[in-house]
Length: 425
Image (cartoon, rainbow, N blue to C red; front, side, top):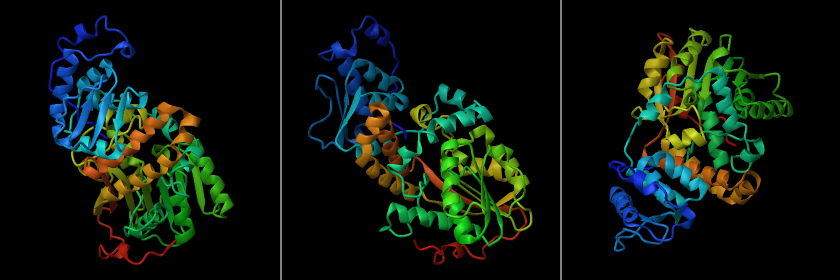
């Protein structure tokens, strides 16, 4: 998600305004400086048709124009934060309640996202140089995926698939679309009974279970989230598939063996820009050179840009969404792989997130009671902002199918994987 309130102003005079200022809760009337600054911000986001309002009810918005919704700024600290670092402070202020959105959240966030401009601050540049070490990767995964399976059960589909669904037709439910995605991945890889498959970043195990049950393959699936691994192992045992799936607690960089197929769904975003070549090393040594193939399913960008700083701080620490060019240059080419198909499913992800947001709204009171109001507001904004990012094209969802250079593609024509699915439910 990216928020667009980015004034090109110098912070001269801001220190004087802040010095000795009373706490925000004691401020009753906006001062001339406040009105000037909010008017400047309002001009910047004019195309979004979002009304800015100060804590005393005053607003520079042209009331003759219909607004998508309103953003209410409750104190001077929040106002100045939006002026100096909007991409971070919009999220921080929303989750703390210092900023309020009046009207439906999703349309307001989408409207603001549409007028955003790509930007890389000095802090972003420094962050991109930080390595995702083995220890850091485990810490980052623990902070997001180990929030508790009960939390994700509240609003994900019944198989706990936390990646973009595939809506083969517009009437599909979320559960149907997630199964359709799992099967599309299998069909693109042209899996055959008895083959060995390596999956890195297996989540709660839905894809591994689907591959083993419906395609008769043997799967080795790695993950570094204890909560997810425990769920996946229990489900495999319960469904009689434990003899065909090995769920291992291991970082992708340490996997061993050679396989007929490699698949990674939703993990590449977590490796970091400077570890894309680590993935290349894994592909080079694990994919069988004769007849092997692989698929990467990941959130990406059209142009290089760091993830929104608030998302990095509160939701996905250490994450980076690469471009196709970066993946091709730093991962697939060094691994000796040839791209044979690329598909962009970004609107499918926008719809997936819309379904997640609808489900989350139904349980938000339960989330607030269990995890606190700030947590609930943060996740509400994260889902809305992510939906906006895919709807507007800020984010993309790529599926790249690849093979060792010089080997034969698994399908003769591009239409083969889109034949009638084997799995209808």
